[in-house]
Image (tube, rainbow, N blue to C red):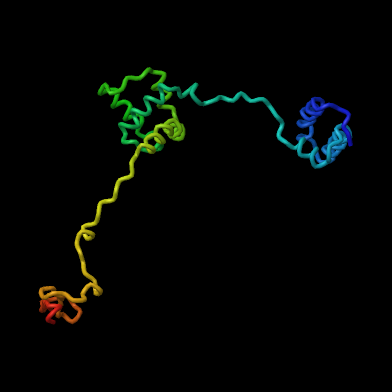
Length: 199
């Protein structure tokens, strides 16, 4: 079926009927829907979807980006974050007033009152968002440390397969406790050393 009304007329019709459709009872909704389908030639399910969407009311959205948390706020936050040993946003938010006051008292930081107010009003999530670029930069610069070699890797240990023809002087050593399985009280220790070559 080809619709005879234009797209702009359809969108105006949807806007006009949405509020009425939402506020109507079941029988009234069915009547509105029938009229809407007759005019637009839409499939019934599609028409229900269009009219069931929440009414569109223009809302003034405040954008919280560089307008509120500008570069001055970000730079001050980085200095405080470094002073706080690069802790996470939640912890930094908790100690921010104390840390800021202390840094200002010792002349490590001097902020404009507006920047100070914005810094203190920032949430933990905002703090993490503002610090994200510097964290990525620091993470990229970090070099992987080489694991130190274990001392045991420097000590040569012979296994059973290495004892083919050992010269005299290579010993097999045992240390035995004669305590019957209990370490309580006093008992005898025996230390045995056997030369591999001569046995």
